[in-house]
Image 1 (tube, one colour):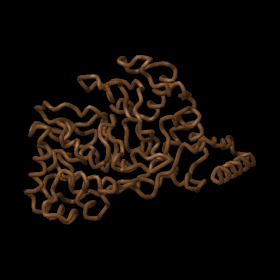
Image 2 (cartoon, rainbow, N blue to C red; image 1 turned 30 degrees about the vertical axis):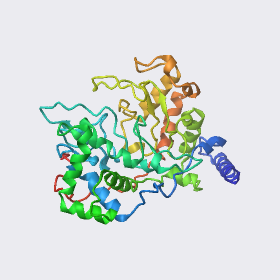
Image 3 (spheres, helix red, strand yellow; image 1 turned 90 degrees about the horizontal axis):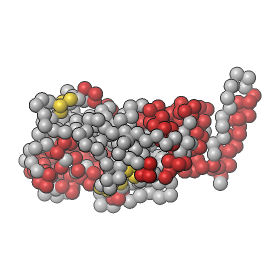
Image 4 (spheres, rainbow, N blue to C red; image 1 turned 120 degrees about the vertical axis):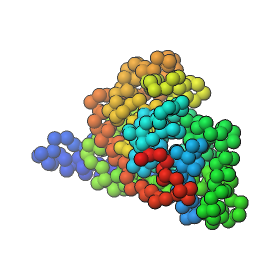
Length: 391
């Protein structure tokens, strides 16, 4: 109640000031009470009880994240598709993993090639440590939802999945069920990794799949952007947002965007059927979670760094995303495989108006925070190319 009273008083003061200013054409609209569905990110990240953060684990995880030793052909690292230069995501619609070269838009397949595209857009690692966070409680980090289809939980488990995927990192070098075993053998052959794993985990035989996941996850939990101008506003700095951004926040709430995009991460971390356009680069129709064309609500934080958008990267700009939702609320379905009865009922509460779009986008820019760790190791223990075959 105290927060709401302070908020109303400040907004009221802004309105008086705006009315008194002769050159002020538009006053600040009062933000509705359901601003309570939004929230600032915590200053500390949730950490699972069985993987406490240590400097040694973080440093080891960073080297592993940038080391292509984890891939079948030794040409792809985690950082290949999650690069600091692109906000720990990339600018491609869907990723080129194994047998690729270049970075971002310049990345192409080597020829000849028989490796398919990665079927979904590369999500940013920034703030993934907060996955599952709501306004009501801090989630158990060991149960944090991951991937567009929620197929695994926790950063520890998520970090191992690309190593096993043919098109992401494995290639044809070995089969999926033995991929991690081969990677661990490689790591054990490198004296520096033996030393670093022992430092991080205190055991001569510390190079295990569990510890591999723990180290990478520990580094990923340091890639945080939790002090955006929106966060400052929600913590009490009511000068942090502009008049247009406040209007945009009001419209974001009024138009129904927050029905799915709420909480500190602007995601309910649930799957929804929205009928996103098909990705023409794929040779099949991606039917998502439970084969229902449902995909997890993405976070709206740091959108400046993480274009293109949606699970398959088919929408290039924020304008096109909001126009897609405007069409959807009007009954237009962009995916021919999705029927009206499949569309999520929450769409009935979505009322995006074309004239609101510029203001909503201005508000979304307030969720950007570029003060995440962008540093890249000068070298990796394998002595392979840092980040994989990207230059």
